Amino acid sequence: MNYICAIQIMIVITVCYKYKVYHQNRNHEVRLSEYLRTASWIYNHCIALQKRYYKLYKKHIGLYKLQAHIVTMKKRCYPKWSEINSQSIQQITERIHEGYKRFFNHDAKHPPTFKSWSKYKSVTFKSTGYTINGNVLTINKQKLRLKFHQSRPITGKVQTVCLKRDSVGDWWVTFTCRIDEQQIKVKTMTGKTAGFDFGLKHFLTSSDGVYIESPLVLFHSLEGVRKKSRNLSRKQKGSNSRKKARLEIARLHRNISNRRTDFHWQLANHLVSQYDIICLETLNLNEMKKRWGRKISDLSFSEFIKILSHTCTKYGKKLVMINQWEATSKTCYCCGTKVDEMPLNVRKWVCPACETSHDRDVNAAKNILRVGTSTLGIDDVRPAKQAIIA
Image (cartoon, rainbow, N blue to C red):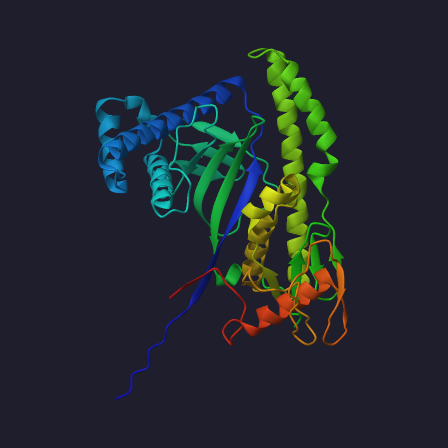
């Protein structure tokens, strides 16, 4: 007898919705700040415990032992900790545990450190501790009602809620939602594939010969940053005028970051609409920052790659990252001849074998496309998704 086993595959991705919380009255601001202060108290207590344990035994405390210790301390010594939701406390310990895990795996240079209450910015709720009613978020234990500007509807099942205060003092709420296959938006397939080369002169150069310029928002706002920084340094420490000057420069930096992020999202959506498969080259950004410094930070290549990867996943497109050691700039895409040396000041060159004239960036983009498509298999050509759950 033959048996047929049918497995239903459900494709799931995660999206985030970020909204600005309306300005609260003085009482609400104080209670929210006190809430974060208590969360930072718990965080620093865990860090002190981990440091003491590491000094004695050269290892960190396990996650479940740390959580059990916090529950005991909350009941016996610090009843004020009960104001924080239990799952929010679990998230704090999980964050510390992941930090130590990355440190011992040599993925981080140092373990988690202490944070002052003024620099502790966020609290995360998992599945309990909050209620959502339209555009009103209620923190149950505190009976705090926070009204936020719901600029777009929330789709999918809410998994976590993060309440965060930025450097300007404004509050933001971020909903992390899970979207199933029926709610995934798939863009129309164009059948096009392209390779792109990052650069300092041009943000991206495509294999089609198209140059995409960067807005260089920090470069164009540098004079304003310097002026406001000088104004801040002249203020007396602890004075109200210094606080106002600090808020001014914080608003300017937030504006710079928002403009850069907006450019990245618009470019990512444009590329995903134009191409089905996008090939890029991995970069050693730490070494690039040592050589070119602020210019690399202004371009923010790593953030763009994260945004492009998320956009490709969301709309069913494919992002291919090739090895950074591929000699894409020094190899002729026509005949495959590799030149021994090519300084960075050489922007155009002629192949010694086939005598083809090359633009350095366009040639690199074409080689990235060649290497990227050669690594694709039958399964890789299919639309990319973030997670597959059987």
